[in-house]
Image (tube, rainbow, N blue to C red; front, side, top):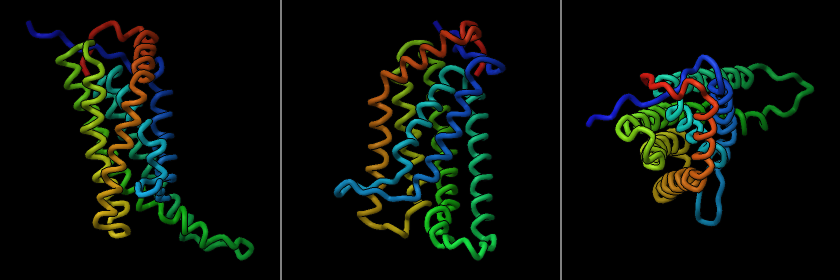
Amino acid sequence: MRPGPARFAETGHGYYPIIVAAFVSFLLISNIAATKLIAFGPLITDGGALLFPLTYILGDLLAEVYGLGAARRAILLGFAVSAIAAVMLWLVQVAPPAEAWGNQEAFEAVLGFVPRIVLASMAGYLVGQFLNAYVLVAIKRRTQERLLWVRLLGSTVVGELADTVVFCTIAFYGIITGAEFLNYVIVGFIWKTAIETVLLPVTYRVIAAVKRAEPTYATPTPA
């Protein structure tokens, strides 16, 4: 017996706008935090790795509750806002500083590197988030409301792997190379995947709460 259509909530009301706002905010904060490389002993990562995994948890929430189309709109909005942020930071950087303001070098040393980070983030983010949403919804169409952990973890592994490889290559290849670069990629992937795995019980509860709070989720609708 073939499974019926998967259930998804409508986006015209309810919690969808709030979740999208948090999704985009976490992305922007992660882009700025990622300008700093962090070392925990021999393990190398960047500041964005502390918060960025939460964008994937919110991406899972959007795809699971609202469907692929709704997740796609949130992803594209995040892309557009990141692009605007990169352009604005570049314009501020190249604008002539006032004589009384002596922090141009400090600004360029931190935020002046952001456009490259944002380019890396946007490329990795588009590939990773689209794969994450696509895999989650594809599995849900087969499993319906069962085996939520399979689609959460399966989509995370695929999305985070693609995201990490693309981001690390564009953002820092050439600055770090060889074994150090491989260390950075592997640690980033394992770290972000581990965070999502550890937070899986929380993700379960949040998804369940949002499903209960969305009255339209009870009716099967196309993704």
